Image (cartoon, rainbow, N blue to C red; front, side, top):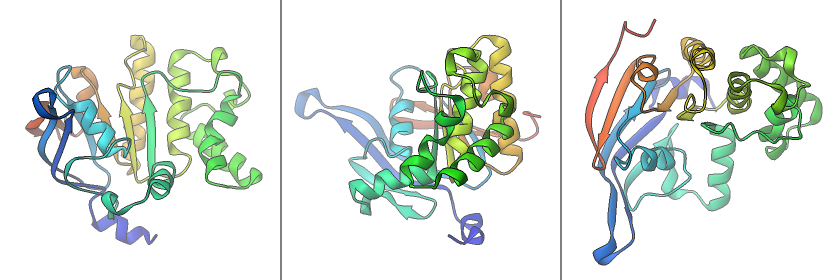
Length: 239
């Protein structure tokens, strides 16, 4: 893809997005006509109470679920037009996921964990290693490449998960409560990494219920009852 094309179009373009679970009297509208545009290089925090719809929105943005109504384009690609196989490729190559629980393979080295998306993408061994080491270096973990996850602190495990999310050079990094299982020191480690990634031009979307995490973003979306109820720029606050 031409890098110039990515620079002039939204990474996320959502129009009238709706998601309903169940049917009839038991139907639950988790999202109701959401419109959202995120441009390259933005750092967005999505906040909301439990049941507000923020997790449903994240699942739709990450192509882990499909909407009932509305349109979603990621990096210029219409998600509704993709087959299951194409969706799988898109998730692996254009999206980087960071989860609250790290999701590292326990008996596999940090380096091998970071390489995993490249294995699925069919990248050769030598190039996998080079790219995984570069990603680990980016998050300050190159010297822990041979360690198992249980030999890392919580903050280091989450930084390894961030490296894994970055290794395919995704258009978008989606982080779901990335500091939820961390102590205050490890939380600051992870937030520094996310700040640095964004300062280098990476597009980052974080789901969080913590105000101090959201303040690191440049823009905060608040979701309530399946709708976006506030969209606030925080320019100049974060750093």
